[in-house]
Amino acid sequence: MLRVKTNPPFNGKASGSFGALLLGLLMVWPSYTLELFKDSHTTLLTAPMTDVESSLLGSLPPLGAMVGTALTGVVIE
Image (cartoon, rainbow, N blue to C red; front, top):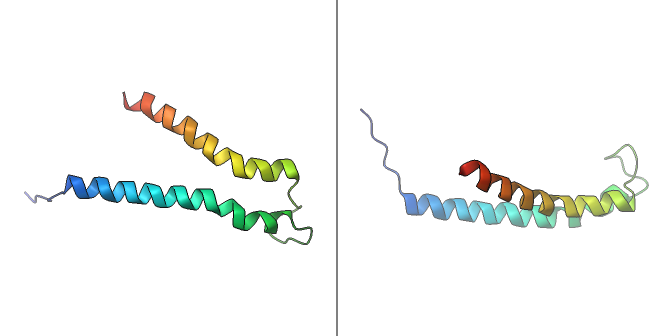
């Protein structure tokens, strides 16, 4: 039987670091792309984003993270 050695402290550190990286990317991404999406000459979307759509782009990911965290706690137990 082949045994694979795991290093739980390393796995935890790697998971935490990867989570921090994803959180940083999630929080910074709208600030760079929002101007491209709101531009009237954009080719990325079929129509430019309105103010409401652009505010939802910035606010829904943190709300989803909050709900996802609560649901994950319920599912794990």
